[in-house]
Image 1 (cartoon, each protein chain N blue to C red):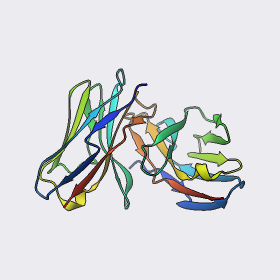
Image 2 (spheres, helix red, strand yellow; image 1 turned 180 degrees about the vertical axis):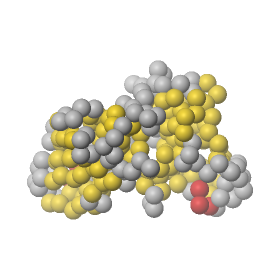
Image 3 (cartoon, rainbow over the protein chains, first blue to last red; image 1 turned 90 degrees about the vertical axis):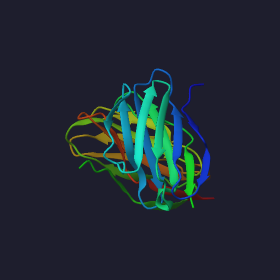
Image 4 (cartoon, rainbow over the protein chains, first blue to last red; image 1 turned 60 degrees about the horizontal axis):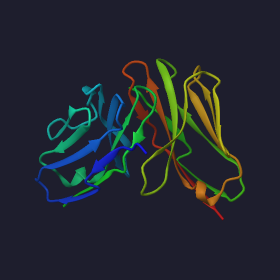
Length: 112
Length: 112
């Protein structure tokens, strides 16, 4: 049963620390998305990769966030330094371009 | 700016009621429209993907229609059940970069 796997599921960290979230997309999918869910903003697109190339990261605060796909089986979202306002659930999703996405279970990040 | 609007924001219905909600999206550069069902503490689950004007999709008691010329889609639930309580998200995929942009969702509460 193919699924998108995200780790860790939960992360509590102190302000100023680096946070790395990982995603294993479904094998064969050519697009990977990172979304952030907050109560205020709903589901926001942070970054979007197609065939491992970053196509759009305009939704991501550039000064502290970075997203990479070192290979087809791994996508990472890094926050350095983290701030309390970064507390949210971060979802990774993979799919075929324009054809929707399958979501991971999310990483619940709490920055204290 | 790609904007996807969903209405209403939330909806309270009685068990057995039929209901519908709306997703509005840009009518230009249309590629696909997706509906997702998102239960609390779970990840969004794909319901439908529609690509052609006039498309209608059905899954059990849930159905959806698409009008790409005027930029809207309706989601219908016939005979709502408490287990239908969830947030229903629509997402627009455009031809420009094949991004998937989500609306804020309609939160449905079905009372037994």
